[in-house]
Amino acid sequence: MAPALQRLGHDVTVYSPDAGETEALARERGIRVVTSERDLPDTCDAVLVQDTVLALELRERYDVPHVFVSHGAELDLAAPPQLDGAVAAAVAMNDRVAKRLTALAVDIHVVRLRQPIDIEVFCPRGPPRERPEQVLLLGNYLTSRRRDALVAVCSELGLRAAQVGVGGEVLANPTEAIARADIVVGYGRSVLEAMACGRAAYVLDYLGGDGWVTADSYDALERDGFTGTTTDRRDPAAALRRDLLAYDASMGDVNRTLIYSHHTAFEHARQLGELFKSLVGTSVERFTAGRELARLVRSQWHADWRASQLWHELDEQGAALRAQERRAAEAEQRAALAERRFEQLVATRRWRLVTRLLRPLDRARIALRRSRSSRSRS
Image (cartoon, rainbow, N blue to C red; front, side, top):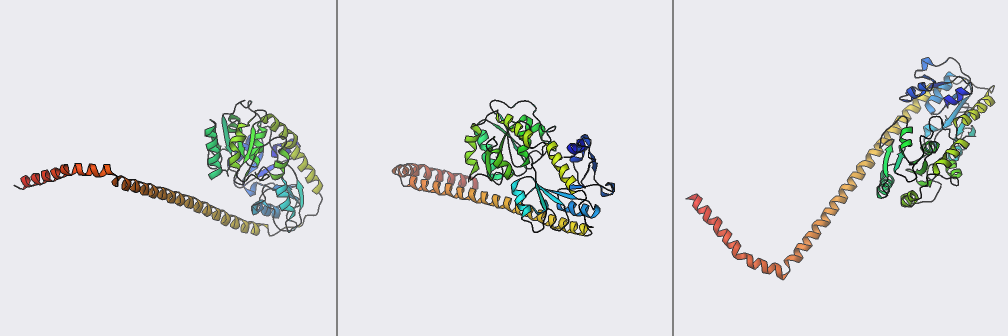
């Protein structure tokens, strides 16, 4: 959002105490980036924030309207502080999040906007192929059974599959990977980034799968945040082969038009500007408990994160144990089958005949060993 706001004439400072690789990307775009609180400006007209910790810390520092952008309906850290006066408004970018925000105990002005995409960064870099060759799994959550099913179907259809995100290659900027693909499979924002690049976009992730983004399916998918839960497909993986065979290169052109019509960062910046102007002059009370509350939220977030990591490890160990139990059971079945076949062989007339024919040879071997043993002692 920062480049679009700057082009509207706003003086923008981006602040993150842990900016990572994003800092270099932002500076390349001519954006002022601050990574230490001591370097923040003394005053500002408004604050746009997207996590609870910084919402609390910056609210204590700046007595100006704060707008909280909520990026999820499931995580507590994606919700504004549950305190009257902490934020002046909250932005939801799909209906699922908007419903959660309106259900909060604290009364917050909720504004529904659409997810913004920087069309100068995410743009077509050549047309997609008429016949697909490359499928990109874009995101951090597609794992286990659904991922395996997708990769298997791609292999069956002669499609190369690559993954960017946790579980694959982690990139600060995925545009090159999107450009190499014909089909992008993802969830949430990654779907919109693929659409902006003029690629066919397929909604599939850990929550479910809704299939292709089309002109007809877009409205329902956008309201749901492209999470894969708008349809009643109980096993989305079962539809993968049929859907991938229905690929059409023109899907990318339709998707690009949808982004230009509904999701440009410039339009989002304009709507944010109007929201900020409507909040100018509103009464903002002094807020003094922000830092202590932020510390407590950090502690909770760390505990939640650690718990999720432990659950993940437990799930992996459980899967490994189940795999070992399955291999052991298969080995027992093979052993039992071999034993039954041996018993059947022993019971045949041919086996008995061979055994009788071999008895003289067995007696000869025994006699030969005894003779050799007697000579060695002498």
